[in-house]
Length: 492
Image 1 (cartoon, one colour):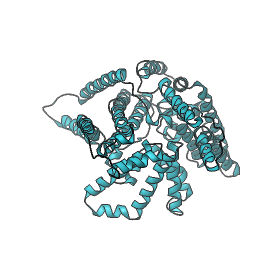
Image 2 (cartoon, one colour):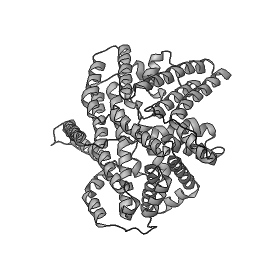
Image 3 (cartoon, rainbow, N blue to C red):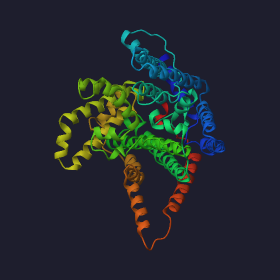
Image 4 (spheres, rainbow, N blue to C red):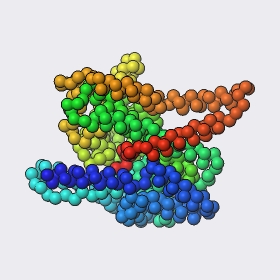
């Protein structure tokens, strides 16, 4: 009974947090916070005061939903400001290494305490048959992202890749910048160090930033939210209501939802960064056109994958020694990073094992076969993987997999499922097309054609402006009417 109550309480806290927190796809952010912030930001010309204004805006944004956790953000920033100074001064002796170790202990300790303490104690109680009370903490928003940023900063200073930042406020600016604060991408200090003191905002970069933001907003509101509702329709019922086709369509809709949700957020973050004069690296590169698990993870959540590669996998020895051990550690941590639950760990190890099998022999085999086999293989493995991501209960995940592969007394399809799938078939096709570079390539080709044409005499940017206005109006209309508007990566 107590366990059930705690689970309900955790879920209630998560729902309340999503409602009161300020996210990009909210009317409050779009038509109140963002306009006022930009007016304030661009009213100042001096870069020094612009930075102070941006710190104020970012902390206000973070404090909107959880003011108490601003103190934790400030603590992490200033602790690693001093760690960075020590690491730079003592690179050649034990004090420098001690600063890195201290940074890891503090940052990972805080992350572990707030994110994993309940998970650890629940498993300890289960193994020992004890009933030690655990406190359900309200997870500080974005802690998984800014923790990795401060860790990467200290390590890069120690490795002499960058000089330590002498101003604690400039480092705070890097850590707290609101575009990427609560859901990434994981921005490294090396990528924006120069832009903190010297950045230029042109009309062209400002326009590109607005365009990128609206594209991301549209991905989130128009595609991800609708796909999420359809996914819950097919996957959120009782097991007795499932059909084989419905289970596959439901997990396919979840795959659409999570991609457009997270890549949409990354697009909005990159767009906002560009508006403010910062260039963030790409975080997604059309992952669903991949033909293997290895390629998928070169295209999906690029900032996270590169973090684990540079700060965990390579230091452990990479491909040179203990390759299998290193691979399993990285993918165990990748799964655990996504959530304090065994389903996420299993999801991470699932991809780690697939990547190992591909490297050993499967990639060579697939390369010898017609491309359709690689496409079919990828679609199956990625949808099976998302099952473990969607269901936090492992028994539910295994039961859905049984249904998907026809292991049980379930109908292939029923009338209700058929009607739902047919009614949303066009939406599914559009989502598939938009998850590929087809539209991007068509737009580029059209722009080149207009530029070289002797008969067409107009600026293609006018069309882009009209399309953006239409997408913004449609997104706004949907936000007014939608009650379903979660960010899946918001909880990390």
